[in-house]
Image (cartoon, rainbow, N blue to C red):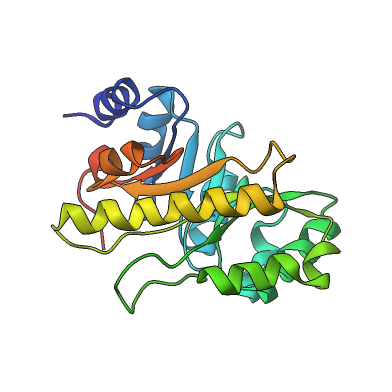
Length: 222
């Protein structure tokens, strides 16, 4: 199946309120353009160098999401154009994004990454750490970041029950945080969870944003 057909099939399958992030990491520009020409506009990259290069070379109405683990010293390279940073997992990183956004006269959208998996290799905040950030004076003074929701990655497993439980826990965290900190804030609405192998379960559990790579572009190039 061609990339364009894959895109159209997924867009037809998912509810209208769910955003599709096409994970284009490791993929060449011609693959991205094929997806673009099929109507896809949101693409996700996990390496700053690759993201900057693709931003410069590809159509300027693409919305670029940074989906990987972002180092503070790399924020400055993407601050002038990035559409959404998915995986903010520390106050330190949030402060850095805020200061680089300010230099570029922008407000940058971010998602807090919540640790929901039973895997050591995954990053993220637990609920207590998230609340500590949201209650901190430092956070309250950040004017150039816009928290639009939460994201999380389920355990890499065939156990559907476990995956469902982890996604449900992220939805529950989202609802608690929304109720307490963002009740009157319409921007706080995204639950980013679900990838190629589990996005259908994620949508059933309340995902509003899925990150799909191999189901669109084929297996990853290493």
